[in-house]
Length: 335
Image 1 (cartoon, rainbow, N blue to C red):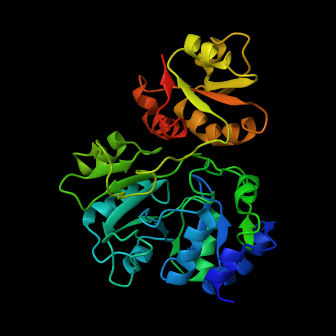
Image 2: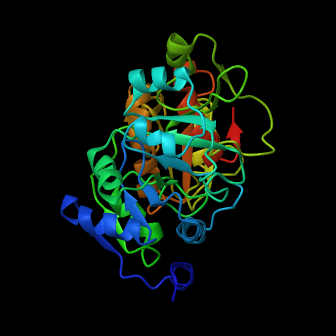
């Protein structure tokens, strides 16, 4: 039975462990199996980026559309040379400032890089994660690792090993447990193959921060026909219960009243203003809210019949978080 057949059968006895299983995890990667591992953003579902059969297994395990590209994780700028055919000076300047860290740089792909890994594109997203378990897995396996988030397609991204286990039990052999992730949402993706460097997916590293290194940087706007980066084209980050955005505390209370049990999530001031409705305080800053939101949503969907999310569209500093939450709600927001 090859790895694709085994992935379809979904008959793994999934094991969760820590750094003591790094050598086992590296062996799995080398032989074409999948391993879930922590990064500073979310947990990734990793395979050898150059092994087409292994990459197919990621699509099978996640139930992911094949035109949705994967990010390739490497341990250093030197490691990026195997994935990209050309690396401009701008990429090295970004890596010097922000890597290892939550930044993915889109570059022309190398001839060796399979099109299945890049979603059929001639470009590839490359990232150096700021997590020692992730970096050690890359080093010990000797592989560039293709890895989307380690959840089934469309679900809430995992920020704890237990979240991965919920979605991937029986589908993969091993989950490396590194505790809760620090950043909590996926990396910023910047495309350096365009005339003006363009942020395809916002994250903790903002366009303004990138512009300090590159000069002009723009955020992608408009309808997505071809997904040039993960998270652009399809509905994502969705709980199993209804999820609705609220622009005001009054709207949040009104929405909650329509359900047998509902919880409001948002920034500290917003949550305090909803009064006696069940609520979860995500924090008082963008960084705190990003770190806590996905785990809070995973926990809440097990208890409540509806999740009401604060809409942050009028708060520019929450731009990246609002990008994720608008996909969680499918654009359903009330005033």
